[in-house]
Image 1 (spheres, rainbow, N blue to C red):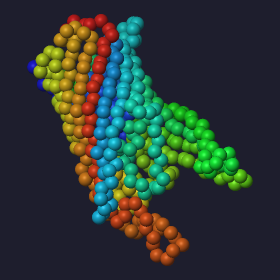
Image 2 (cartoon, one colour; image 1 turned 45 degrees about the vertical axis):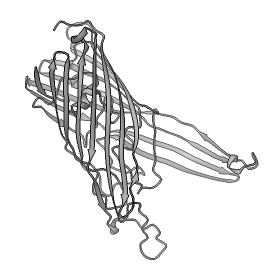
Image 3 (cartoon, rainbow, N blue to C red; image 1 turned 90 degrees about the horizontal axis):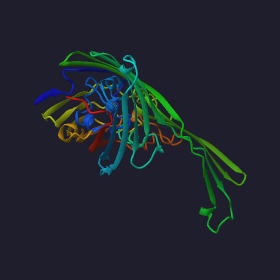
Length: 408
């Protein structure tokens, strides 16, 4: 029986404005091992499913492996203006992931190099962009957009020596450009609604962001890591041209979505600088792995993630409070049980948000109608609001080893 903490007295220095958690960075799509340990794996020996958390961990693999994972998530989220009933903003969604990694063949120095790739895909679509109609629309920077897109990554790691691993990679995320033409053709049908022709020209260019990591194991009981991840951003851009006889109107849709930090929100989606930029955060996370039998490993993890959302006293109504993370899971190694080259992992995880409370400052609110005497306020969060967001997840991961089984 062996007991080891997921951090193994490890320290992880994350050089970003906040955390991003995923196999290939789709929010909340981690493998079951990573999720069950509350993402506290950057200083632990890695695998193909944890390369985004720290690409240096990829250098720990000793044989080719393929990973398939899936998860189901339910978001419990509500918003209520002061004195009004709660508005349910909850939804359910899922995701699938694929990852592969292998040591390089060849001479001894090339065998110290590992390469990997990963792909995460939402269960319903490749990319969904929800653009709010108003700057004061209640939105969650953590939950509303980040689970809504596919992402892919490639990584490379080097086993410098037993106590030092280094790695890096590139994360690819699609953007969306949609030039739209709306034309009114009077008399085409008997209904004026059917006289409108809409033409869409969609394109999905890819944006790349780098990530780098190092993992040191100076002693068996001590692991150290440092990770840098660049921001992952989608820039939704497109013209909408409306034609009705001699009248032609053209408007530009130009919207930024920050999927992952480090530039979590230096400006809002309408291209306006934030009056109160989002906060840098420091999360405390930990986990425990317990190998109860040679073929069975139990895991649990937890922690606290402060919210990057500042106090909402002005025009914006960003939803989010501090979050308590609790997780548990298990892994069954069929190599030890029946010599099948497969490991099955599963997990349950809850991200339990605290209640958010906001009171608006009239001096910070925009005048809805400057032509009318006095200050006219139509802010959707005025005079204040409460909200809460919690996410519940269940997931399963299959790891297939395609190399020759090694003696243990």
